[in-house]
Structures are given as structure tokens and as C-alpha cells.
Image 1 (cartoon, helix red, strand yellow):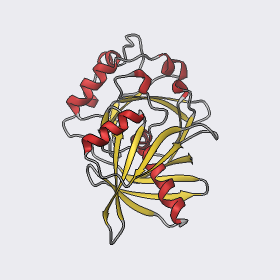
Image 2 (cartoon, rainbow, N blue to C red):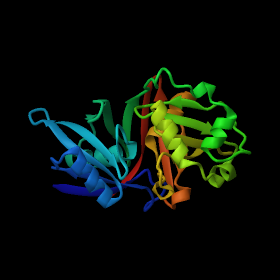
Image 3 (cartoon, rainbow, N blue to C red):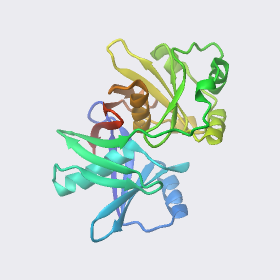
Image 4 (cartoon, helix red, strand yellow):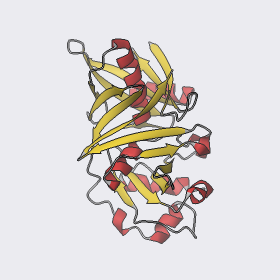
Length: 265
């Protein structure tokens, strides 16, 4: 078994969201979950599904749960696979949970993952969420929303909530248990709260862990979801709350989204 620990989406050298890439592990899902909890970091297991073709599936685990998709861990896998092959050609892999195809590529020093817009659950009442309900989720009764919350997905649905500015963003101390319960009821993987910055960039925070200490430093699936909701590519800052400054870049072409950034070992 080989382990590769990397940081992904770092805004500057030394920054980034950590992930561990594991090769040659044939353990069960339960054993992988235990392994991930013991390491206390996001892990992605590379499974060779067809020795003849070399087809690879990516199996994602957070310390608290298995995940259908994790973009920063996918970038870490892209680094391991593409640096080894020294090829600039795109590489196609798939997710272990749903078999979602992912196209990995490299542009100069950044790695990208190409995904498709996904359709959130049809019965999701996101458009019917009142301001009061969102305020309860975020434990912020005086919060003023800047747009109607929406759910969007590139493989892991997110409830997208816009607030006025960075001060509002970093003052939040949401009700994580309520967010988790609401997400389980509606098939949504947490809330992504964001604001627009004066320079045209965006900044966000992801809330999908019961433990506030597990807050993400970078959430690529949320960046992709926000990009499809807005209909354009963006530069998204994240990580101030965790002390790991991250920058996620996205490109949008119709229903196709590329999500990328820096990877360091």
C-alpha cells in the first residue's frame, strides 16, 4: 500500500486543503472508514477496476462519512497519476459510488477536474425555503440574504446561500446539527455560504460537518455548484476560518465545469 499526502487549492505555496491518496488498498468500506478516521483527513482510495485497460475508480472518505465526490481529493489523485505518467493528455477516471466520469487535466502548474452539471433531487424545496428557515439553519436570526437560496450540483448537491460581505461570512456559527438533519432529509450535502468581493472574486465557507473543527479549507464541489448556479466561471477564496488559504478556479462551458488549482506534495 502506498500513501501520498498532498495539499490542494492552496492560494500560496504551503497553503491548501490536505488529502491523502491511497494506492493498493483492498480493504472493505468499513475498514477504509476506520483508516480515514484514524488519519483524521480526507482520503481517496485509487481502485484499479480493469487491469487490462488501467481504468481507475476513486473512493472518497471523510473522517465522518463516505462521500460520492470530493474535488480536492480528486486533484490530489490527478497529481499522483499525471505526475507519474508525465503525460499532458487528459485522463478519464470515475467515482466509486455512482460511477460518475471525471476528466483530469493539467494546465501549467494547476490541475483541473472536468465534471458535468447534475440535476438535484426533483422534490427538493430549496426555492420554497423562507428567510426564517435559512436563518435557523445558520443560527443567525438577523441575517439578511442577498439572493434566493438555491441547490445546485456537480455530483454532490449543495444549498447555496449568499450573504452581504466577508464580515457576515466569518461571523457565522451555524447550527451544524440542524444543517446535517435538513441535508439528510433532502439529499443535500450541507450549506455553502458565500459573498461577492469588490474585486470580482467570491469567498465562501462550507458547512457539512457536525464538528466545527472539521470545516473544509476548500470545497471544490461547492465551487462547481456555485459556478453552474451563476452560469459562469469564477475565482473563489476559502480557508480563512481554518488558517489554510485556498483559491479555487472554475471554467464553465454550458453544462461542463472545470474546477482546479494548485497541488503540492
